[in-house]
Image (cartoon, rainbow, N blue to C red; front, side):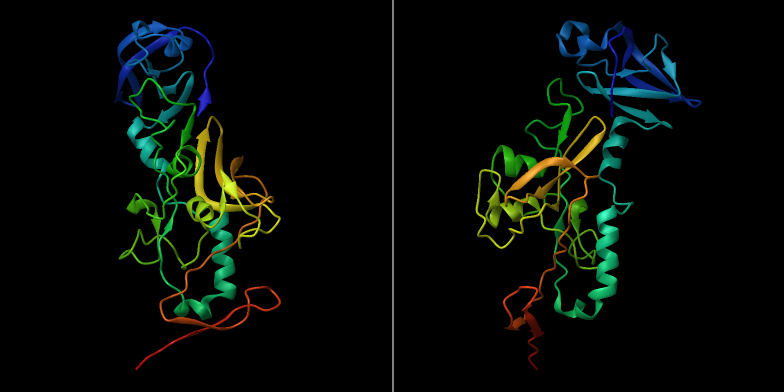
Length: 278
């Protein structure tokens, strides 16, 4: 996503891909700034442009808000771009690190763990989010976690999409995890007492350090932002994914697990055992 300059160009309300080029259809000539002014300019329909006075190009740009756009190539349409945003083909840096830690330190304990759903909710938020056919919205693409934990303040542990329900087994989720480990979500942190509208340093998540959560917050222009637990103890959503914060791998104990000893500190960790009944 990038920001366009203020010039007059040809726009189309749709495109056709022919012989390696996008052909603009039902064209009009106007400035990108008129996109946000009034319906007489045709901004509600004419969203595709080459940013030139030509009506065809090898890559085309789709204006989704004001002068912000998404570049499309190789015959892709805007629906294709949306689907790519929620694809599960590439591992993040954090997932790679967590998997490496688990493979070296936790594989002997897998039998004690539940293959639970870890919800990386990438649904577009209705409040300030993006409808590709809407003339309103925001330059930021807000995700569901922001709607629930910042806008409406109604956290939920339900995962709205199977595609975002990360599990090892495809019987209970999307089956995209290698190990039953991930990060806590913004909703879980809010419910634990670190919500953005009220928080307590007495809850078990308070560490006096910043650490990333699983829930994405928004994507705007060039940067992606994700929720994190602030060093002050509250839920925050204002930092880019390339910041150097900590992570706290989380697991879910399987049914029948008993805690025999310990208090959960590094000096006296919990000892767990599996209660097996013949």
